[in-house]
Image (cartoon, rainbow, N blue to C red; front, side, top):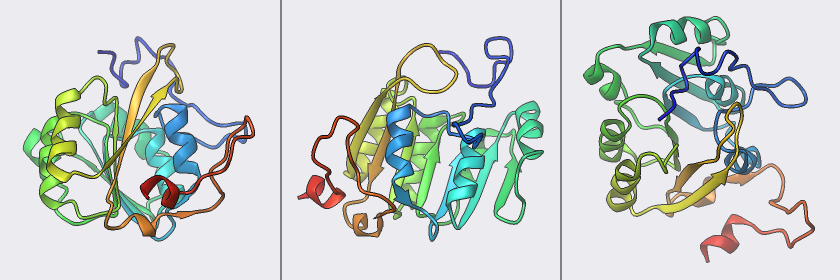
Length: 203
């Protein structure tokens, strides 16, 4: 599969919206969904860094992110707001996976060793949400999260930044804490379809 850190394949990774704000390298439908939610009182843990790190730092109460690629770490570290984000380089697989030792409201699995990360997260996750990017590339990882947690699974398939192909970003929502997801604006359709709420989806 293509790698998000291949400078030979992708000379520029500085994807941004029309206001020059960084956007995550998730599918556009997933990012659109996340943009509707208020994460300002939530803590976030992220495996794998990038524009998503900058995006989550701007949205969340606090963020801890871990990276295992030294060159990529150096690139992203220059853009990090240290007062809101703890950013670590862990090149050893065990250290990388097990750095997530505390509860977080949101877990992001979007870097190396995704299945091992998922297996670790299900042992400690009691949060609100887990985001697994490229879930169609990692069906076994998706199954670990689905079968272990039995949370609500929402697949967002489509195009996203940088790439000329479609993929899937999957979001798992904890049914016991879904009431904590607060919308900053109502979900709606560009085509004029009826607006829906998360309560509608869960009932």
